[in-house]
Length: 218
Image 1 (cartoon, helix red, strand yellow):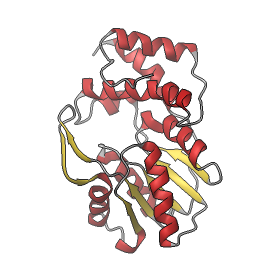
Image 2: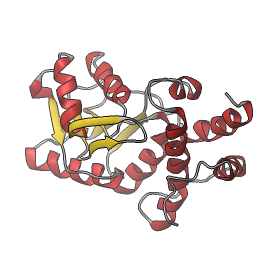
Image 3: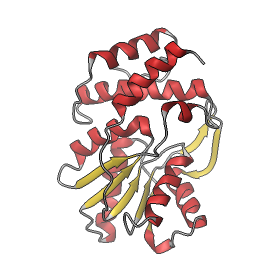
């Protein structure tokens, strides 16, 4: 463990968490992810009564060598199967299994809901902790007429990095997702977000340490 590295990561982690208060909604919407902990969290929220429906979106079949994640189904189908195994009724699960990125998660999920005749007005948006701000910014751009709250599993940065997935690979993802807050805002893919100087400085220092393998093109 490197205290300097951990300190830089904490700055970015804290920025990416938007801290919205969880509240009941029409639907829990889990965006695609390689992290089964997010699915478990969304399923927990369903069982706790936060919403009567679970919507999983994600068309990627995970073959992630860096993280050691290998699945046989698209993300949404994989998570739906997991939800069934955890006693979520099939009639309460909705699956959108084409989306390949965050923007498509929102666009394709809304198309699915419209085709199936669901008129949900409020959503709980679930993703990894370090993607909260990107999810918020994308929802503000693409779902501005709907009510939503962004949430993620309540886990610290240190505990997240000390789980089953490789630590250095996770750091690459965290740094890459932070940079996308600026790049995708500049490109108009999501609503621009203010980035404090302290957070951008931490990002640049992490890049200088070699955590620059998952950066998006400006």
